[in-house]
Amino acid sequence: MILLTGFEPFGGESFNPSWAAAQQAAASLTASGLPARALQLPVEFGTSADVLRRALATDPFDLVIAVGQAGGYGTLMLERVAINVDDALFPDNAGHSPVDEPVVAGAPAAYFSTLPIKACLQALQDAEIPARVSQSAGTYVCNHIFYALMNALADMPGVRGGFLHVPYSPEQVTDGKHPSMDVAQVARGLELMVRTSLATEKDLKLGAGTTH
Image (cartoon, rainbow, N blue to C red; front, side, top):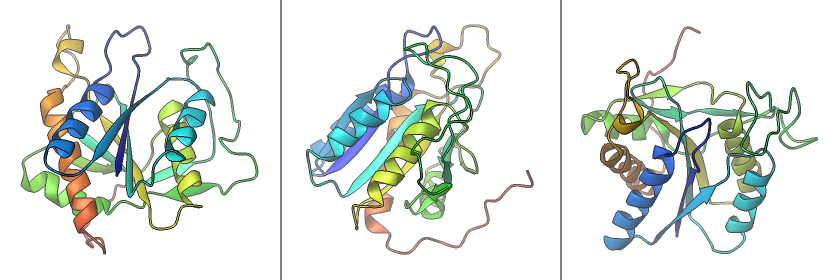
């Protein structure tokens, strides 16, 4: 079983492409014979992690990919590292703004994604879907859920997981000042990541670093 999560709208938006893409990808995977479930998470510190942990306890998942929106970027961003800190730039949907607080008290400073992110990057590029490896998922709810996921999976041997940031959808960009990507293409990329992750035991050694 595959679990794909996306977020509810936030920041005054009425739509979140992460949830739409998770739903589309889960439906396509299930139709092709790979059972997948889509789960919507609240954009709330703490509560989102609780919802995720309850979901992880319901089924024996083999793979979990959490998806979030990163407006202002025009590529899929495969996140490499989740860090144990909440530092909100603005309040979440419940009005909470934690500053310099741990996601999980007493837990490690960081976790690496256990997805084969370089193999996924190569597969996305081969499919002509713009993508790159990102070295930081920020310190808002996306990183919060990424860290909570990897912390939970640390006690679930054999289950791989990670996080994908996606651009705005075209309907969210009304001023033409920000890049976007069709939800259908995002969903196709997410589905390709799932298939690549299931088929790849050892990740590729592929240069995809940054200077800062």
